[in-house]
Length: 300
Image 1: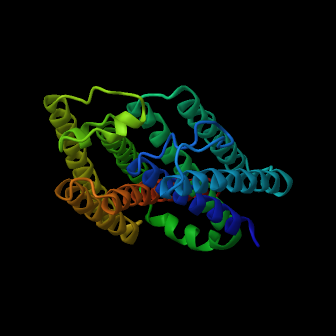
Image 2: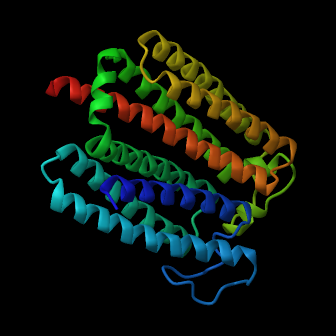
């Protein structure tokens, strides 16, 4: 196994954890285990318990792999400060995720508080995507990246950052809409907020306002994505990647519409969240590529 293999394995496992977390939200299974980090006596023994235990077991595996990854980098790549700091930030994000998840369970935070968990998971995924990209370049693709470097205009980095940040705002708006209970309130349901110890669902006006906010941020994200595609093609850099990102966004929008049409059917909502994670990971990859190309330019 090479370093970039382990790094990509960690990245994929982070993505899997995010999808399982989406299933837990859809099944209102966040508190099926009343204790943390151990489960204690589960409140029910069904598919919800399977999702929750799978999430916790995968978290342990993720922690082991991240420690292994950090030791490997510390041993063989400590002179690569970019790689070192990206890994350290990824570890910090993982620690925040673990501690905050434990606090949610132990103190029964309201549903909307899970938005912090969602955003941190996206940032953690992005950091490990960037680390994997650096490790891949270090191991195999230095010459390819160097040959692409002549096409990279510095404006690409700004466009990539704008796309990524806009994506974060869109994910945040979607998370607030989902985890505040507003998405269920539109259909007269309140099982999610009840699982968080809340008994007053958002009003119809607030639910519609949060939906409009999510749709608005998505529209801005779509314009940002089209802008990124145009810039990528005009600079002949990341052209295929930009089209892939636009395609993923199109799929994401369709899944969002289907989620509402199906009244939050679990499989579709989970796919919607999984596609969002994949989209943000792709945006992080594009942003990472601009930094790698820039560093190669400065070192040449």
